[in-house]
Picture 1: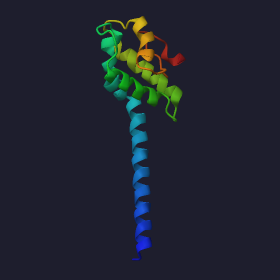
Picture 2 (picture 1 turned 30 degrees about the vertical axis):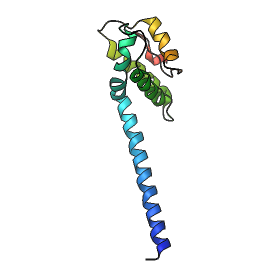
Picture 3 (picture 1 turned 90 degrees about the horizontal axis):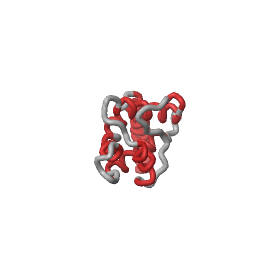
Picture 4 (picture 1 turned 60 degrees about the vertical axis):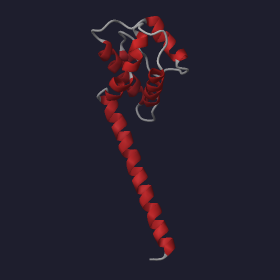
Length: 128
């Protein structure tokens, strides 16, 4: 087989593989939010701050909140994603000590970001 044909075949295979990987990643991301997996994985790092045990959020908290923010701003169904993140957080904190409202308000500035989803002890997430 001529060298150019081999190169073209390899390029085609690379494009197919990368496209398939991106589709799987998007599918996994949608699946995670629908079952709260990302929220239960990322959000607990912030509970220590939001419940008043630490004076500042940890770097892990800020990093993970940024990841949830990216998901909430996603290209697909972003309103649904914000609502789902809100509901997952409420489900997570239900039955525990409440989050401190001043800490909730301080989290975005402490982590240098603007939240794309609400955090609260009790909120009508369908109105997000």
